[in-house]
Figure (cartoon, one colour):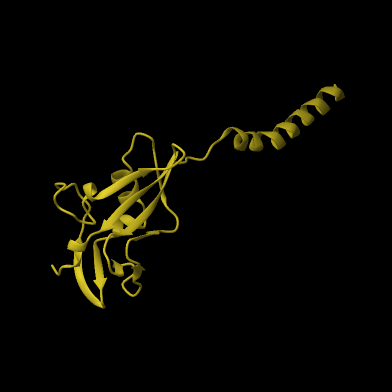
Length: 157
C-alpha cells in the first residue's frame, strides 16, 4: 500500500514537472513563411527625399541618384498572399501611412495621398499597388517590394 502511494506521488510529481514543458515542446509560434524587405529606388538624376507623413514629418529619407535604399526590418506574409497588398500595406507601421511627399532641392515636389488601393498601371503612385515591383530573392521565401521615384515625380502636383 505504501508503494502505491509513493508511485502515485512520483507520477503526479513527474507529470507536474513534464506537462508544462511538453506544451512548449509541441507548440509553435505563428510565423509568416515569406519575408520581404522594402526598397525605395531613386530613378532620377538628382538626390531626392521621401517624407512619410504623419510618422516621420521631421525626418527626410534622402536617396542618391540612381540608387536604392533598403528600409530596416521588413514584413511577413503567407505563401498565397500578395506581398504588396497583404504584406507591405498591412503591417502595423505601414498601414497608417496616409501621405508620402517627395522633396527635391529643399522643395516639396510631389505628394501622394492614401489609402493604398489598386489603380490603373498608368497612374504612378506610392499608394497604387501596381506601382510596386515584387522582386523574389535567392531563396523562395525572401525578396523585396520596390517603389521607384521617377523624373516625372519631380514635377509639382
